[in-house]
Figure (tube, rainbow, N blue to C red):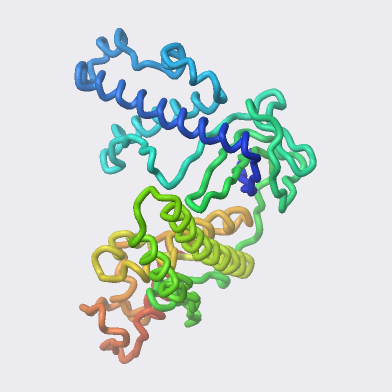
Length: 370
């Protein structure tokens, strides 16, 4: 079977290359906004009338290149991918309105990026450098080798709010899907816990280190300095990068911990079952915003899912409406509990810790639907 994998590396462009990247980011943003404005205009005029739309098709990136000659200064694939991204966002909106209508890209956005495609060896490695279209060789830190047999498909160059350049390289490779003999006795249920990250069906608490909480005082100090500076000044921009670096450091700590924990679980268990809870809604509705966002449990679920799939094991999500906390795992009776009820006794005589009981129920429900 054919699979994809991405590898991310740090770039160190020189002054001339940084100017080119700034041009590329700007051109992609400009083109995206122009094409979106054109689509809005056509939609207001003709709606979804298919016959009229055949006669009045949206303008392509090639049409805009003829109007704005400076668009020729950047990679053609970057402009083509901007058009593809807009088309995808536009179709997703009409497929599912909850996704939201595509938004115009702001020049003040904290994230800048563009994507280029690999074609006829236009992107290749040479020692500690990578050759990119229109710009030549750019220095990078190749902290891990891309395995032989991986074919380069595309590259996304990005600039983080802290001023660091990165390249994400998408590769394609063929592999055989592992088919291990799965043992249902090696099944684990995970119940999300705001103070502990999760409690599993063995009664173990993950005890997430709460990186944001530990750095909160330092962050507040740096943000307070920023608030007192003149917007747009050199010192303001310098302090803004300093705040961004502090946030980036916390995010990297969180990702590192999540990767290690997910690797540990995926190596040990054949089945892992979690609840598909709405973390964004929880953060906004229960005064748990800082704790929920600091935990990064949604990112943990995504990373754990692909690591389990790579090993041929099963990652199972159960419905968020399943009464995992309120049902007794001994007799199945459902009780009316408040959020403050952390321990309770069922009529069958079993005494439960709320989180442990929920984790056991999640495991059993996951195995039932597996």
